[in-house]
Length: 247
Length: 247
DNA sequence: TTTATATATTGCATATTACACAACATTATT
DNA sequence: AATAATGTTGTGTAATATGCAATATATAAA
Image (cartoon, rainbow over the protein chains, first blue to last red):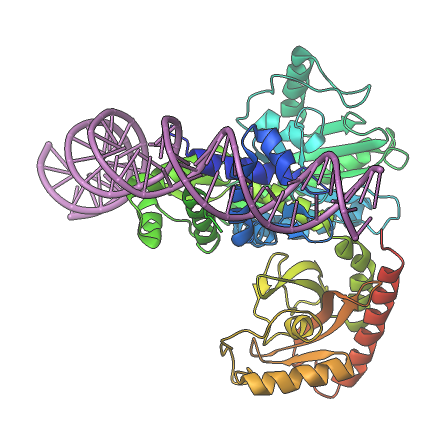
């Protein structure tokens, strides 16, 4: 596989910018990529010229440009799963009172492609485009258990409950496959519990994962079975729906 | 300004892919850019490797990859306007029953950065990331009237009501500045009317535009004044809110 | 204000890198 | 199975991106 160096560098700059909430300067970018300031300057100029980056004139730092938002729209609208799942997410939110999320596997992580927010003041908001680790989120575990992604090499610890042992995770995945749903019991964020189920297409192949997230004070261990039942049913319904839309 | 050729080519490929709902093949991309198949192949390989493109194995065609969605999130969350405007959009939708939209100027077009959908069956949906022309949308006219974007050279016609004469548009903008709101009376889509107002920050500088869109059967000419009043008030409230959040 | 420091942009020579052409491999079509 | 179309891999060539140095610009200090 031949890599086009300057394109790869440009893309790495985009990635860096996306992880820099306060933007980045030319020198910072050059250092991060171990390239010359001049090269960075020219690469950023090209990105800017095409709308992929933009300079905040007040801070003189570079941010991602609006063009990437326009790109993302075309990705999201292309996903038939998103279209089909929307009413089911809404229904999920209404029945449980918690925010409902939809995710697919991307780059070894769970990429959130849609969300229906709950009206509750205290709620778990996950922006579309968020990429969370797979091993410690309910949606991610579903994607691991039913998809064809390998178990990540390193299982980073986020909370005291995070599973960091590969064997433990493997056993968990077996159980998830058996029971048909996954639970994240404060394994990624303290005080947050999630439940997720798979959405499968007409061939039974995994299309994505959907579920709810809420504060553990509201999603108590006692309520989990009742909530799980709702989510499993919704997942089945969506999967059934997907079986008839193999366009 | 020195353009990095291969990066520019890569970005142009991304643009092409975003306008190709059914994806694109290597040869199509090569033809569109007037470059060799081999070059296109290598560029796409790099894009794919970094998650910016992906191959649909069933059709053997290339689409945009999930990475661009992840990028867009960082753009959207960075915008303080979006955060601040959310409750006002919701309120707008609830009071009018129509979909509420929020847009900023980008690349000479109106870029939709947020939306609150109405529950109505017949509603005007504008995906986040959509880029509409300025001269024939209510949000766009606001951005033209109060922002510092030049009037587009060519005013493309979309419907019989589209303003295509620069002088006419200039007069319209003067009136919009005076009255403080803009109306799109089936100038972009037949059967759709929109009303929009500006959102200004603590310096009185334009931050974005917000408004509603609905079918002209429901948003009749008679109802426009009543709806306009609501929107103008909401715009003032948001602008006031923005005056206190100059972080 | 002036000086000093940090940061960004432009010129330019070198060589690395991307390029086009072609051959090969793969997949689709007949 | 044969043919056509499309995608990928070599390879020599030359154009292009690169790094260094110098200039220009902006920021901080004096």
